[in-house]
Image (cartoon, rainbow, N blue to C red):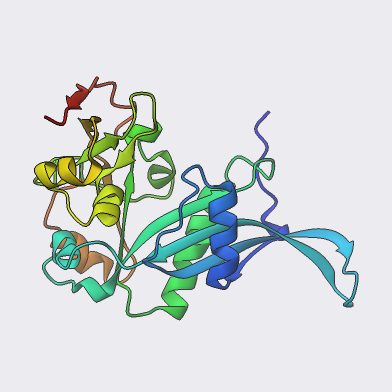
Length: 244
């Protein structure tokens, strides 16, 4: 039998960046904090027990959602010509502990929409991505009625790199931050030894109109597409880059 969350025991409020960062690094599958995060909300669970020091119920922080400035100066108009990039947030991280109900993540996202409308009225739209590299197609975005715009909007392919034959794959942006370049010839000189690369599976893009919905939806730059239901099974060629 499906267990739904008891929303009467849940509350959502703003939390500081350090608290959010600790939780994301410890529990989120990526274990990475995005420096562009500038808005973090915590999901609190009322345990029903009396607080050890105050005359109120004790709460536990069981989840966190973070929003931040999207990558790219054209991120606003990539959604709608009427939007400036300062009017768009990207949903960058979402994590909720297991065991509190099957619909808790969608409830949390919906509550974050309400919080943004009340506290960040300048933000008119949201954007987020689901990575097939992690086995995701965006099920949680589908459950909360985001608009799906496919995975072919990005004009160029991005790459993943592996510095040892059996090492972990590193995204090209991360490698570029480390070596200050994404040019393959310059990387060969800076890395100094054989490494491996492969194309990154294109991420699924979702957008959500927070304010002025009718106007934004009428002027979307890219059409709404049917939701994907299965993970892309494409096998990507691994290329060995040797230093001559």
